[in-house]
Image (tube, rainbow over all chains, first blue to last red; front, side, top):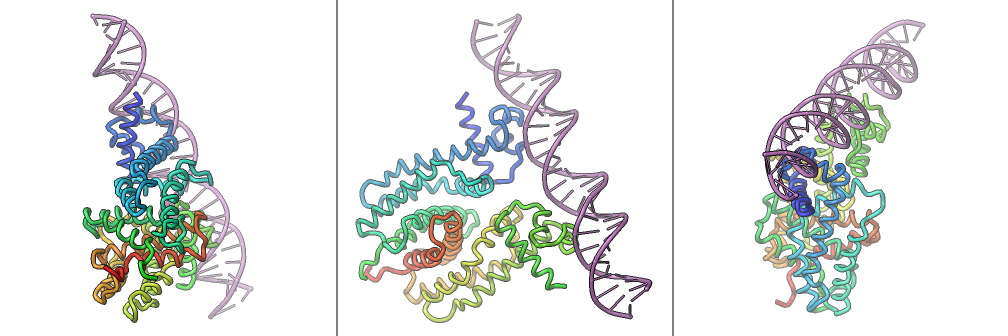
Length: 183
Length: 183
DNA sequence: CCCGAATGAGACACGCTCGTCTCACCCGGG
DNA sequence: CCCGGGTGAGACGAGCGTGTCTCATTCGGG
């Protein structure tokens, strides 16, 4: 069943987000299946991580999709993007550090596609005169990811309240990216 | 010689920053010594990581010290802090992810001390009416670290030019933290 | 009811890393 | 000159995670 595979993958994602160094046994238990079955569905740890990367990419893509970054006020669009992407923060952070190890130089083209989408949002805002021009859209994209993950991380560490973290990241980024009204 | 130990530690830091999953052998080679000698100076990998944490803390502390965060205009002080801390970004990022695994709940008190120093800078700026009040100083501190590391990361990934990364992180953070002139 | 597919449990060997130990070597001081 | 400390090289066993295999069990459909 592909449905089972999907559910297993979700559980694995959650487990590895919580403990990136989990062994295959821990991973299997967390999905409620045995190590043997896990191995039957995914050839090995590599295969599993690949599948997780694909899952993360799919989730982020649909999150950005749902945020409709090319519609309406760029600031509001950015708000939507952050709001949609925030729940994925922990999982994406895991993928980043994991891919760091894997990566021989080839990055899944899907990530570039999502990046391009966010990048375009910032460029649109710059052309509208809403966002600053001295900050590269590429950097703003990078900063967006960084602040989202930092937000999740700060919550986990108990440094900021869970309900404030999202809005704070949003506010800092928007305020930082917008041009001053008076030059 | 404690001098040797210091030099070895620096080399190890550089190696692990580049490749966090290095084996003890690779680590030793990178320091120009044999695995046996490495084991003679540091009981094991744990001991080594502890020493590295202490080194990172020392470096960050002296960086913040040199930035004199409690002197002069908060904005300028923040600029100095970022400028001083930026070269440490990669190394600190490694320590964060590594401590993530180690940490049973006890964090070296030294980190809290540095955090408190940066936190105080933001609070001072808020009391001066320069920084926004709706963003917690704790969050701004967290965001500072996040943007610094993101900056280093973006450079390594080739997404932004090395000479621009520092100023961009600074600008985004300062612009984001400052109150709008016109409410 | 029966049969086949899927699953769980466990055994097993392999590879990797680590920590320790031994031994030969070099090098500087007495 | 000799001698002791420090070093590099390598061997060795232990531990752990992994991948594969087997076997008994269970579950669902014919």
